[in-house]
Image (cartoon, rainbow, N blue to C red; front, side):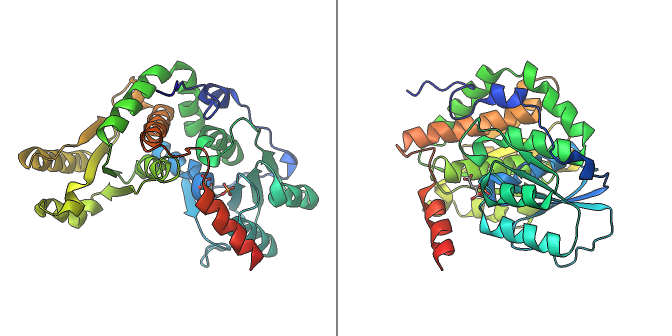
Length: 324
Ligand code: PA5
């Protein structure tokens, strides 16, 4: 068994937790009330986490070329350009368009073209340290960097819990989940507020374990996806393994829906996992949930004997796009 611990070379969670972001050209970064974060894959997960921790924060996630068509440069909107490699096509395009439209910009990157552009154009930027190799493994670094750029105190408070998290307990939970998920397709349901956690677990399963995985939110999933459980003789349905992420802050009406779904699973003998966060437990913290999902995917990758670190198809696609 792989000797997985939370400060191993792949994740270095403890080092990530200690990181203090430095904003270069800081004098050019003003105060804003609205934020739009441009980035793809692992580089645009941190913004989802901010939504989970601080639902009052006006933050939009843009995973596409350019900037959202409707976006007006009203002086109150900061565009955050986030790319770990600094070479992702869509994100570089977002930078170009945002500059053309003269939006206030801040850049979060580890290098590449984006870093050079930010330096040449004298825009505020954070150069992420080389602590881990892959963006989805570096989510705590990018979360800290994003919090610093948008000056979000609620999320910063949450991150401070880093020091008190029982990473061993997270690791244990992650391993346990990975065992239950063997040869199954994870189907993660959460509230809309916790959407980012479910999505992070999904992309960890996709990229690290190289398996299909899906995430969805309540109440919407109870208006469509729920019907699949009425077709259990079908192997497509039998291959699914539902995980319910119920957060301590979830609206009681959403919790009631989860309870009804749970009863449905029990009635139909569907094996499932319920991750219920409670105050003052490791799972009540965002960082704890990030660690559990990362460990779960890492162990699944080990079970499937894949290279958890590399993402060759993504890299190959990016290369082909450059050549055209
Ligand atoms: O985790 C990954 O490797 C991907 O999801 C990347 O984050 C994504 O392809 C975007 O690349 P980058 O983060 O370098 O902009």
